[in-house]
Length: 107
Image (tube, rainbow, N blue to C red; front, side, top):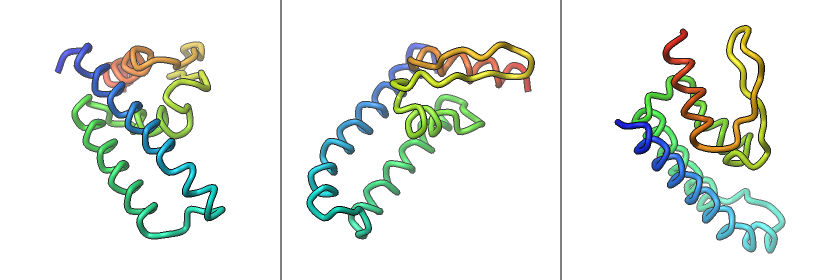
């Protein structure tokens, strides 16, 4: 898969993450929690999508999971580093692919 195709897949998953959050927010606010089966199953299916895309983009380290959930699809600009390399912000799908490619090339 080309670099551009990998970036496009990450962008699609991030868009779906945003849409799911927007769709569920009013429901979660109304019930003041998200402890019900439909919510859990929706996110379980989304996690399967993430797992599938991670396999497609050769992400052996679940970096996409981190990028989406912890880094909020890059909005937080959290830093990544490998080995003795200086940490750098991971704000875009391109940044994430750089990180994944570096990790794959330097196990």
